[in-house]
Length: 317
Image 1 (cartoon, one colour):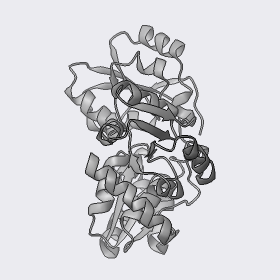
Image 2 (cartoon, helix red, strand yellow):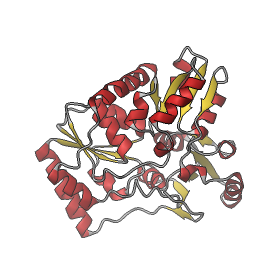
Image 3 (spheres, one colour):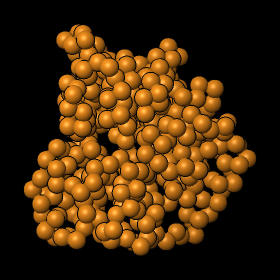
Image 4 (spheres, helix red, strand yellow):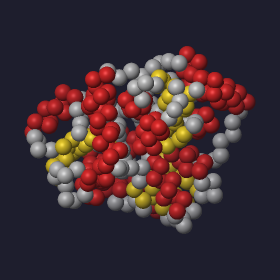
């Protein structure tokens, strides 16, 4: 993952002939193979054209659990495809690149988590979805950025180990002061790179723009935001706000998604790109669907334990 301090605004994408041809082939092949394509908000904008559903992690989890399709092609990173496989053990889950990872997810592993749990024997473990299947299996309940507060509040225990994002943990602590949140020291490099000083400059440059921030941002950045929300929550905020201009503090693909959904409003964002999210391309998706591979496989014992963490999340939120 990487980010830079340049600022851009989105203009409507024009698809060239080659992309239109690929889109047509993919959409036709989906019907033939009884496949559904789930696309995260951070994907390349042309990939939206082959999506059966576009959303944030929680929405994609729900769609993965509900689909009747034989094949699920996931356009996101590997922990998302793992989640789809855990929720659909009888279906084939494929993704263009098995090595499309997540730097935050790599900051926690099962061995270290088990050692950490021994320090707090009374605490329950809430695991952010940006984590491996093994870590989820070692946790009591999963959460996403859109339901983390609800999940934590639903637990009867006061002490909560929250892995792996320390910034989301801090946000949850502020929303649930009755709990004692014990944060893991992980973070998303894309969001963590944003500083208070930079956001103050943004507010001076764009005085009429409301700030939309993802809760993976630093606490001091969230304090300056007008709205703190998951990626799909940002769409709701922008749609219901009277403001006509917005500055988006998350991965740059979200600025394109917002502009697509709300073309009558103006969105600015940083060039803070997640290269793993951007690995997927139309040619790679077509090849993946034709070959029906790579297939995401999760160890059965791990999947069963992780499924319980997902079930508890759905029950709580």
